[in-house]
Each structure stands twice: as C-alpha cells, then as structure tokens.
Amino acid sequence: MNIHEYQAKELLKAYGVAVPRGGVAYTAEEAETVARELGGPVWVVKSQIHAGGRGAGRFQDNPDGKGGVRVVKSVEEVGRNAAEMLNHVLVTKQTGPAGKEVKRLYVEEGADIKRELYLGLLTDRASGRVTIIASTEGGMEIEEVAHNTPEKIVKVAIDPVTGIQGYHTRRIAFALGLEGKQVGSAAKFIAAAYKAFVELDCAIVEINPLIVTGSGDILALDAKMSFDDNALFRHKDVAALRDEAEEDPAEIEAARHDLNYVKLDGNIGCMVNGAGLAMATMDIIKLYGGEPANFLDVGGGATKERVTAAFKLILSDSNVEGILVNIFGGIMRCDVIAEGVVAAAREVHLHVPLVVRLEGTNVTLGKEILADSGLPIVSADNLADAADKIVAAVVKEAA
Ligand code: GDP
Ligand code: MN
Image (cartoon, rainbow, N blue to C red; front, side):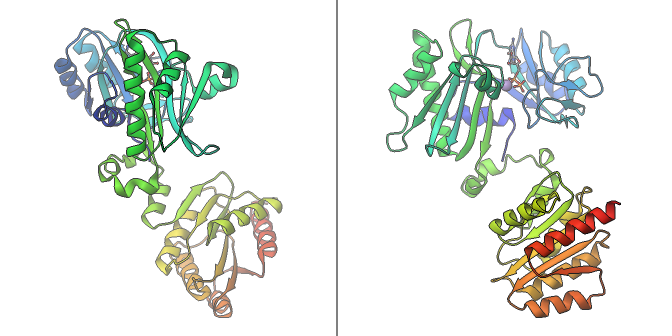
C-alpha cells in the first residue's frame, strides 16, 4: 500500500526524521489558510498523488504551464496555484499518459536548498536485509543514476541482529560528502528513517531529495512510503491512510473478495486456483500464442460468491476477449466451481468465449453442470487442450 507524501512526512516526523513544516489542503482557501499559518516568505505548493515526477510533470489541460510542485512567494499566489492544480489531471513520467487527478495539496514552508541528495530504504531480496541506498545525485530517479553513474550510489545492508550502528550511518554520511555537524544530523536522520521502516513494516522509504540547507540542516524535502500489505493488520493507523481514489478499482474489488488479482496487458482472462497453477496457466497461454489479461488466483477455499466476483472482475477489463477457467478441485470441489461459473456467466450476460478445464473432486458432476447450463461453454480435458481452445476461440472471435 502506498500513501501520500504529506502522510509519509507525518509518520517519519514522529520517528525523529527532520521534515519541513506544512499542512494538507483540499481547497484553495484551505491552502491559503495553511500558508498564512506557516508564515512566509516562501511556500511550496505540492500536488499529492501516488506518483513521483510531479515537479517535472505537466497538467493535462495546460501542457505548457507549470508542474505539480510550485515555489511561490505570497499567500495569494498559493491560492491561485492551488486552484490551478486542484481537480486537474497531472501527467508525470510515473502516472502514464492518463495522469492522475489532484485531490489534495500539501503546502510547505520553502526550503533554502544547498544540495539535493538521495536516500532510500528497502528490503534487498538477495541479502534478505533492509538496505540503505544513498547517492549524491538527489532529485533524479535512482534507476537512472544506477544505470548511468552506478559509482555514485552507496549501498549499506543492515544486519537485523545488530540493527543500525554508527559506522553504517557514518559510511553513508561520508559517501554523501557531508561534513562537520551535518554528519551527526544525517546519522540521526538515517537511524530514525531505519526505525520507522522496521517498526512500520515498510516495503520502501524513499527520500528524494534529501537536502542540505543553506544553514547546514538536513531535511526530507520529499518522502515516499510503501507498506507490506501482509503486515497492515498490525498497523491500523497506517491502514487508515489508504486513499482508494489512488488505487486501481479492480484491485480494490479483488482485495474485498480475498482474490489475488493483477491486471496484465493481454486479452485472455484467467481464473485459476493456486498461484503456481495460475503462473503455469499464463505460461501455457503464451506457449500457444496468446496473451493473458490477468493473473487471478481465487484461492483454495473459494465459495460460489467468490467465483462470481472473480468472474465479474475479469469481465470488467474491456481488453478481455476470452476467458480460461482452470481449476484443480482439491479442497475446492469442481461442482461448486461449475455452479459459480454458470451463475456468473448468466449474471454478466457473458459475451466472450469461455473455456473451462476442471480436474479433481466431483469433476464429472462439474462437467455435467456446465454441459446442462445451455451456455456456450467449451470444456477442455487438460491444460494444453484448454490453452489451445481458448487461443483458437479468441483468434476466431477477432477474425
Ligand atoms: P517529485 O517531482 O514528485 O519527486 O516531487 P519533489 O517533492 O521531489 O519536488 C520536486 C523538486 O521541487 C525538488 O527536487 C526540488 O528541486 C523542488 N522543490 C521542492 N520543494 C522545494 C522548496 O522548498 N524550495 C525549492 N527551492 N525547491 C523545492
Ligand atoms: Mn521527489
């Protein structure tokens, strides 16, 4: 789960990470009020969307205008810029061409930037450790820095037994070219960010840029936090920060029904039980020349209702031109699946070819239910047969 910049800064601040003062605003009037309370002379008005690259992004209705992060010098200007940004669609490198509508703004006190640095924390799967990534090239995408100038990146893996130590933070501070009192401030900053990462079960904490101000202070000018969904149950306050307007409606619906759904770019919808079988199904669709429209694992103990929900979810994707249901009835019985498929197909007035491959408990009964339904469902006997039939059906449909 991702959260907004202002929410991330609030969480990080509570752990002792230094951030500028600021306040969230949902209207231009609120933005002015926040600005007045902060006091000048410089403010930054920042679009809050779950995507980076806002500074360099442009508003869809004004591609020649200013970006999603604006430095202004009066309360009136805060209001004017807020009005230009709120309820307008911001397109950045990370949003894709459709962009994202700005619904919230963050108004911050302006910072006197001397240097822009990069600091990121994530779990490195190779070492299995929380790893801190730092670079002198702040404000740029770290992927780009890694590609063009990898020597400008320092990585420090933290042993969970010792936790973060002085030598870790000093190594990073020196790599960032910090000196004097900045080394101590950076050490405090990095240790606080690490504590937040571990205690809040984060997947990513990214501060880009981390700045050194004219007076030598270290501040998080931007903050991105992403959380491990599987640990959200123990962070109710973090879970409450979810902004559903920023999420894919299909994935929200899937989560509501305990379905593991990931939308993909192809045209063959897949409904499978078990992640391994779902992967195998996607592979065999590709082997037969097709492209899967999604990954969907309905789980081991799915009910008829869940199957119906899964079916609707697949069909909500307008790219879907055919569906392959591939279920191994172990815990789940084939007749239950068949009933769910039939009920859902009726409910949504199925308009695309459907191939069903069932195997396992009550398979004969399941196949009977499909055959007796009167619906144009194609039965398949094995994985290869199923892939062959759905790919052929989609090609035929397209012709
Ligand atoms: P992003 O583009 O979505 O990553 O948004 P950021 O929060 O990183 O802001 C983009 C850029 O705006 C930063 O890299 C800074 O160069 C600039 N910026 C942000 N806040 C301030 C500020 O307080 N003062 C000045 N002068 N520039 C700022
Ligand atoms: Mn940034």
